[in-house]
Structures are given as C-alpha cells and as structure tokens.
Length: 546
Ligand code: NAP
Image (tube, rainbow, N blue to C red):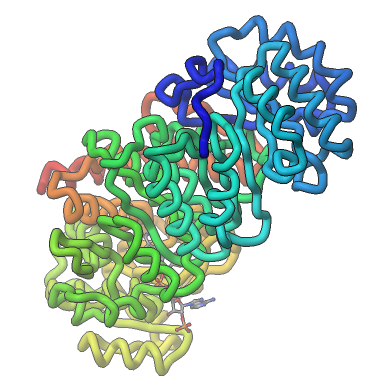
C-alpha cells in the first residue's frame, strides 16, 4: 500500500510543478551550473544528472550556491547507476549518499531507480522519503512490456512520484503507456513516457493521459534519452503546458515523418484559433500499427502522407466521391459516431494556387510524375476543364494513371517539342537540395512552373525556371492550401492561412540556414524572403476569397 505523502509533498504538489522538466548534463559541477544557469530562467524545473559528473558527492557542494539562488525553481537530483542505464559506477549505498547530500543542499526531488529501491532496507528508503520528495523510476531501454506489473511492484513502495519510462518499438506501445497512466493517475502521482522515435508522441499524449510532467532536452545533441524532444519545441509548438484531458489529438502519419513541417503549421493554426488541440507526428512503420493506434488513441483527424495515401482507403468506413475517384486519401476524420472518413485535400492544394493566377478551363498542363500527388493533380485539373498531359519515369504507371484520369500520356521525348501553360513537378526530384531536376532546361516551355517539392524552397528546377523568366509557384503554396482545407474539415472554422504560411516559410528559412551552417535568424516580425513573402500574400488572398 502506498503510504501517506511525505513532508515534502506540499512543496511538490502537481499543480505547482511545470509540465516540462529539462535534463541537464555536464562533465563537472561548474559546467553543469553554467548550463543550468542559462536554462533556469525560462525553465524552472530542471533535472540535474549528477551521474554525468565523475565524483558527484565531492562535486555537490559546488552546486549549493546555484540551488540556493533559485528558490523559485524545482530541482531533481538523479544519480542513475550504470547498470540501470545511467553513468554512476558506484554501489547503491554511494548513490543514496549522493541523493541525501543533494536533499540537504536544497534539491526538492530525487530520482531513484526501482532496482536500487528493491535493494534498500525499508528503513533506509523511509528515511530518504522523509528527507526529500522521492521519484521512484523504472526504465526499459528495449521495449514496452509488462509495465502494469512493474507499476504494481513500484507502488508497493512509498514515493511522491512513480515514473515509468519504456521504449516504444511501435506506435501502439504509446497506447499501452497511455492506458497505464489513465488507469492509475487518479490515485497516484505518475510520470510516464516512451523513449525512441516511435515514442515521441507519448511525450505529449502521456501528459494528456495523466503524467504529471514530461521531459525535454535543452538543445540538439543534449538529449539524455532516445527520442527526447527539444523542450522549446514541446513548449512552443506542442503547447505542453496547455495539454489536458480535453485536448483533441490530430497528427500526421507516414514513414518517414520526422521531416514534416505539418506539426509546425497545424499547431500554429490551432493556437491562432484557440482550439484546444495538439497535432503530432506519428511515425508509422506499418499501416497495421497505425490503424491499431488510431483505434485506441482518441484521434480526431490525421494527415496521411507517404506511403499510405492509397493503401489506407479500403480501411476507412467511408470517403467522399472525389477521394474514391482519385484513389488516394490524405485526410482522415473520425466522425462523432467513431467511424473513419477519408478526404483528399491535395486536390485543393494543387488547384487553389493555380486558380489564384489563372482560369483553368482550356489551359495546357503537364504533370510530371504518377504518384499520389500526381493523381490528385490529374483528376482535379481534368475536372476543371484543363487539357492535361502526364509523363512519368515508369511509362506503364504513367499510362495507367493517364487512362484512369482520362488525360493524355506524353512520351518524354515529346515534352521538349510542346508548349504548356503550366508544368507541375509531382516527383520528389529536387528534394533535400539534390542537384537533379525532373525535366531538362530545353523541356521547360511553359509560362508557369509549379514545383510541389517545398524542401528546399528554392530547388534547382525553381532556379532554372527563374533564370528563364518562367513564373514560379512554390510547393509551399500547395502545402499550406492542403493543410488549410484539413484544418477546416476538422474544426469547421476558417483556417488562419496567413499564419500557417508564415510559420512554414520561417521554418523553411531556418532549415536552409541550418543546412549552410549559419546561425538561424531569430524570428523577425515579417516574412523576409521573396518566396516566403509571395506565399504569405497568396495565402492571405486565398483566405479572403473563401
Ligand atoms: P509518390 O506517390 O511516391 O510518387 C512519386 C512519383 O515520382 C512517381 O511517379 C515516381 O516515378 C516519380 N519519381 C520518383 N523518383 C523519381 C526520379 N528520381 N526521377 C523521376 N521520377 C521520379 O509520391 P507523391 O506522394 O506523389 O509525392 C511526390 C512529391 O510531391 C513528394 O516527394 C513531395 O516532394 C511532393 N509533395 C508536395 C506536397 C506539398 O504540399 N507541396 C504534398 C505532397 C507531396 P515512378 O512511377 O517511376 O516510381
């Protein structure tokens, strides 16, 4: 049975703790203090990983000043033993000595792993518990297995918080962790999350399910656990301090998905429209895993991305006629009856930026590619009365799509001989700064190039087009438009499209700066780059039209 709260409970009541704890590492006390000092103003909840210091007991007095100078902050002392995944090589008795000393110096909480707890005499544990707030922790660095049983064992010991950290090897492991939290967090002060890339969503969903707080890293490269997300991202993008049981869950699902700018864009939209919702990146290694997760997590809507746009359709209860005709779905909605419905907003993503510039009836458009996005473009433009041509690396695939969408297949050698109003690049060629282009310069006989690739903003194709005075429609516009439609489908509200375009263009600028090794600029008041400015302008125009 859990015993009554320790004398420290009043200092660490859940409502007084921030949701986000940042782990601080350093090879010695001065380095750790310097790092903690730079963080504590914005992050009043820090875990000092004393096990990273070579002689923590001797080094602790050097931390005393820092702790005393920040009575507003909450500090956790952790001295995890190497056998349990930490760096401290000493025995349990030495570990306890470090934690006691930390308590005497003013640390409000200490973290002690279950393996050490089990080897302690009841009196020694009681003594520690009476001296300081106690977190009993359990880490599984391989899997999410038997966490229920593990928690049962842990809860036999007195503690202020029970912390379970497992490793997610599938999306569904996050569900297992959430269920444990939901079932026990009303009775116990719990902290729960899954490590690993597959477990990233648990850092937000865990809090939603009752975890009193979660962990974030101070900076890239300073992660103390696999899959740890930047604290600034958890706070600024995912608004972790606002997440509660009523927070609606949305996300983007695909493989890979970590590069996606959808979380930045959609969370900004939710924030702007004050919707209590969070939008996560779900790395789904299989559709089966994704669907199992969707059934159990109260997901309201998903953006579906590569490679599942077509595969997912037969698994949905219903979809609109256009989506069925295209055979690809990029938007999933869970209706009030719990059923899953599919939509395709890629069509609007392609059509709207074009319609803002021209009337589509009768114009000659060449689509390069025959994948999911090319499908949306072909069906969408055909429906608008455009004369659509399509070419593709794998001729057979291109011909099949051309036949299905009732557009014309064009053999690649014929492209250079033709004149178009618009050429759309619906292949990934040019992504990630590759120097390749989907077409050669002599094939660009067109008034507009719409390059659907948006990372980077300035692909080689775009540069080539500009050099030939061809007007460019950046892929960013499609990205924002398809997202705007998703937002509207999910929330029934008009989308804050200018805000969405702005945050994505700034994220792209930051990415570009990081790639060339520049310090990313602090976010200025207004979008600065030409493409970004243009995109924002178009987006605002589009928003006004609707
Ligand atoms: P997909 O289903 O995988 O289709 C990719 C198409 O590109 C296929 O037709 C493929 O030809 C062709 N392709 C791939 N590599 C090629 C190469 N090296 N040379 C020539 N053709 C190549 O992908 P998708 O979902 O349609 O997406 C395509 C691209 O659109 C993405 O990579 C992304 O950059 C962009 N996109 C943009 C947005 C946006 O919002 N702006 C949204 C979604 C996608 P084969 O048939 O011969 O394999």
